[in-house]
Amino acid sequence: MYLFQLISTINDDVSFTDVVEIWFLIPVMAIIVPLVYLIRAKIFASMHNPSLAEIEYELQNKKSIFAHFKDLFRS
Image (cartoon, rainbow, N blue to C red; front, top):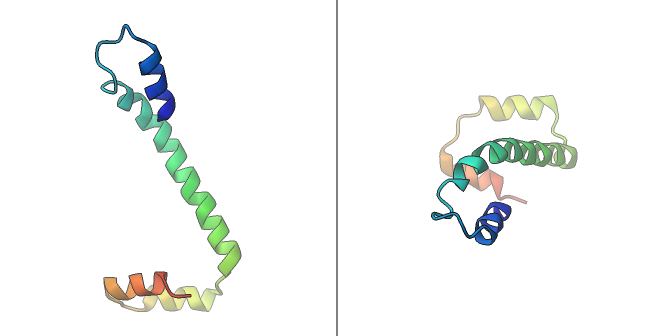
């Protein structure tokens, strides 16, 4: 993102900066965001390593949205 802003700053003959660059940024972010999420998921799985029974219990247990957030921040 900063690279696009730097290029538009250096390139003075562009009349509108940060208008067209967002369209170039969308495909880049479409690749980077899922990649970062998958890396995060692999690190989380390697740290916590839940058993199959724990996963089934979490999927079958009906909770409110506040209970989900409370579970996310428990230690």
